[in-house]
Image (cartoon, rainbow, N blue to C red):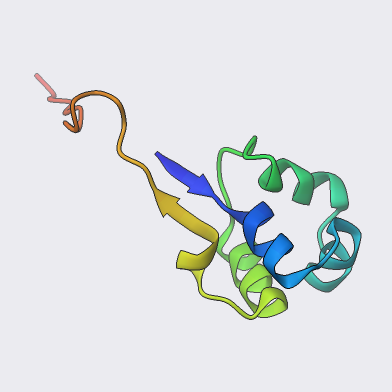
Length: 79
């Protein structure tokens, strides 16, 4: 699973949701979805704008957390 750490980076940079929204050019509501880890996807253009506004790398905003399924990736095989 990929975890979005926007809340952590925002706290480190001491930037509000509204200020970041202005800098990035997306609504505070959409930014809040990312911040609260409710989003299902992030556009590269949004990720790029976040990295520019927060002066960070994509890896600062995301982390991989292994699923609880014994560390094995499910494989789908076409028959």
